[in-house]
Length: 111
Image (cartoon, rainbow, N blue to C red):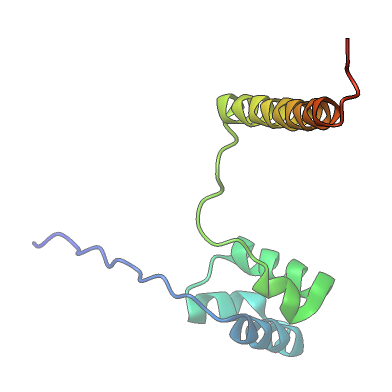
């Protein structure tokens, strides 16, 4: 006997308008499971789509995140905070230097 060959499902990117049509069809027919089977969609994914569609319509479906969510690295966040502080200090120093140059050129600081 041969081993059963595993069929790999191909992922399909559906445009938001198509997702909206599937959701409305499921609402009309009251048969979400049949649509999920027909379109090879996981029921939990379909439910997430449905929730987004009910909240914000087709625009809510356009804002769906695609792919993996980026991890928040604490080191990167710390470096970003430090960079913001350094930029702020640099701006303060630049302003102070410009004020000193103006006061020297106008003869304000005569001894």
